[in-house]
Amino acid sequence: MLAQSIMLGIVAGIGILDSRIFGMLMLERPLVTGMLVGLVLGDVTTGVIIGAQLELIWMGIAGIGASTPPDVVTGGILGTAFAIISGQGAEVALVLAVPIAVLAQSLGVLVRIINGYFLHKADRYASEANFRGVTFMMWIPPILFFLSVFIPTFLAIMLGADQVKGLIDAVPKTIIDGLGVAGNLLPAIGFALLLDMLFTKKMGVFFFLGFLAASYLELNITAIALLGSCIAVVIHIVINNKNEEQVSQPYNNLTEGEINFD
Image (tube, rainbow, N blue to C red; front, side, top):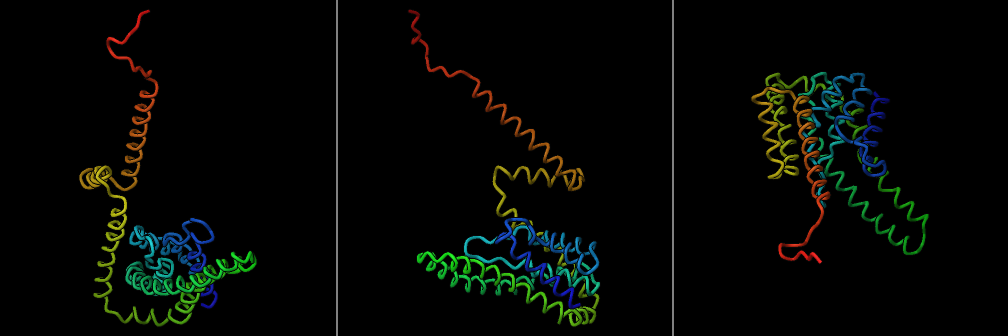
């Protein structure tokens, strides 16, 4: 369990550094971390299934302005890990991941506050042309972010796996089933958050078109995605043809009675 705790802590650290020093590689997404957790714990299939479930919940979460979203890295990794360790499946992951992510959010806020100090130190070193000091200040925040998820993940897996498994086993089956039903409703929140950012009057018709295709034509997600792709290509061709026609038409600013035949 020690080796697995260290490896899961490293996975969490790599996930939190995504979009900070690695670029936007999507390593922090539950779909990726779930697969990696399953790989470490020897159950890749369950890890991918749970990661996909958590992805539906958090797909619309984004940090806007000064707001700090729930820590999807810590929540996703610990939720998936405890579900695999306990053997209870996705229901446990959905129940544990959300509160863990909200609690880890507070630690993320603390790290951001501390990083503000090093930011001002970097400004002072830059004004003094101390490039070594600026470089050192720039490396401290990523290290703190790494530790902010590595340490909680390591301790939770190392010290809490058996306790969590015992706690889950002690919960009556009716409660677990009820939490599973509630957890299945959580993806609707993720879609609502995503639609809140994407939904416009011009795009609304396509949303309802997909809804009608799923409800009345009974098409699956793959078929609807392919149909949407075809519609997008047709719209693109029509718009391009319209623009080409406007460009090809010669511009004539003469009006009737202004033609000079001399």
